[in-house]
Amino acid sequence: DDLAGLLEPEDAELVRVIRLPCDNRNLLNLLASRTAPFDPNGNYDQDALRQALKKPDALPAYMEEFMQAHAAGRRIVPGVAFEDELNWLFYEWACSHDNAFVAAWFAFDLHLRNVAAAINVRRRFEHLMERDQDYARCLSSCIICRNEVTAQLLKSTAPDFGLEQALPWIVDLVELPHEDTLQREHTMDELRWEKLDELTQCSG
Image (cartoon, rainbow, N blue to C red):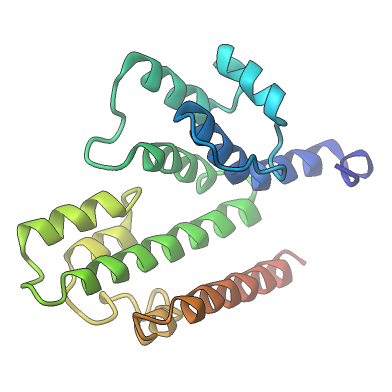
C-alpha cells in the first residue's frame, strides 16, 4: 500500500497480480463460509471482496469465470477440489501474462507446487503398484493445469518423474525424507528465493 503511490501505473498493476493468490484464498474462504483468518496481503480488504462477490465482473476475469460457474453449480475442472478449480484458472491466466517476470515466476511456482503434490501422492501409495487406479485418480486430482511438466508427473514412474533435465531442482525435493515436513518447506522456500534472484538478474 505504501509503494502504490510511488509506482508507475503499469508497475502498480504488476504488484496487484503478484498479490492475487492472497485474494484467491480469501475468496475461497468467503465462498465456503470458513472461519480462517482473512489474509490482509491481497488487493481487496474484507468489505471490498464481499461487495465484489455481488458484482463479480469487478473482479479479474478468471475470478469472474470461477464465480459464475460456482453460482451455477457447474464444475470447471471435474475431478479436482473446489479450491483447485480457482487455482487452475489463476495459474493458466498468470502463466500467460504479458509480463515476462510474472509469467516465469508463476510458471515456476506452479511446477513447484505440482511436483510437491506428486511426491506426496507417490509416497502415500508407495506400497502399491504405481499404476493402481486409485493412485492415478488421486494424482490426477492433485495436479493442476496441463502442460509438459504435468504430463510427466502423471505418467512417469522414474524417481525424478523424468524431469531432472527440465527442472534440476526436483532432485532437492525427491531426496528429502518424507517425514521431514519442516525441511521440505524450508527447501521449497529456498528454491523460491533462488528463482526470484535468477529472474531479477535476468530482468536487470
